[in-house]
Image (cartoon, rainbow, N blue to C red):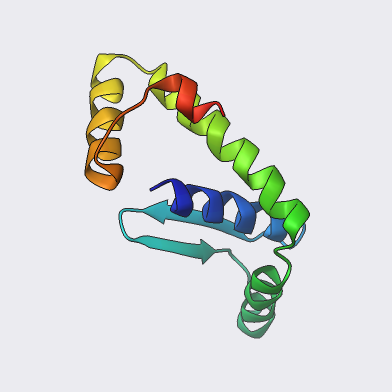
Length: 101
């Protein structure tokens, strides 16, 4: 969903310096990172969750819109999947112009 993609981008931005990445899949948003220090890894993830600011969210929205527009450029199958997801989520599809707003 659009909200999950914005959250994924926001968490990736907030965790960038600590090496924490975010992922999103249908119904799930999460964090991952690699480290030999397990306690430090958990601290980095918790700090990432607390580092999401209004500025980070604004940047994340821009990145999520860009990602959505690039997905539309992936061919007819991607377009069909995007249209289907949009209809299932909101009941309609308004096309790339609405995503770019």
